[in-house]
Length: 107
Length: 120
Image 1 (tube, each protein chain N blue to C red):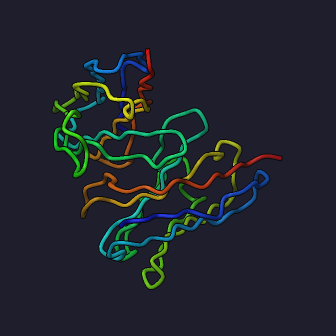
Image 2 (image 1 turned 90 degrees about the vertical axis):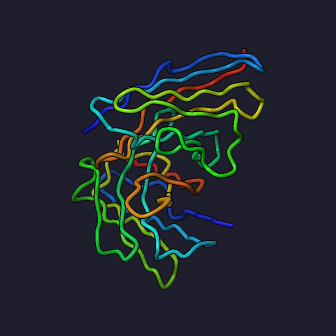
């Protein structure tokens, strides 16, 4: 199975901050990589697919980059609605696997 | 508008069985593979299983293989998860999720989940 390791596991940031979350795969997964946002009691939301493609309807302050084994999610200017937990996921091979999550909290 | 609504969760004893359902609307259900993903309370997401649009192909995580069965009824726009020989470690919030496109293996829509608690 492909292991996905996210860092940090949590972070505190202020409104307007630039935030970067990273995820590392245990083997080369090319660009078969995705990011989700999850708020308590809500359905997870797809943000980025294929490492850097913005899902329809997602604000442009979210961006993704990387390929191979190292990937990042950047929020250019943190907004109140962005406080949530973010998960990475590889779609290269079964079983599909997720990172452990990064909780973004208000400083 | 795409909607996925899970139901069927509840409390069950270890060794027991439960059947989850997911009612889908707002898209051509039989054109898309569907999956179940779970989240142990306070933990991360774990892919459980998936099924192709025509129901002819299924895949399972090793942790549930032989105990869980995914199925679908395209005439009812519904996805199911039959869970048997349940263990305490199966306690989780179970989400159904729609695959964005053929063989992409990521999910553009999710339900809000149904809670399964395995406890004596």
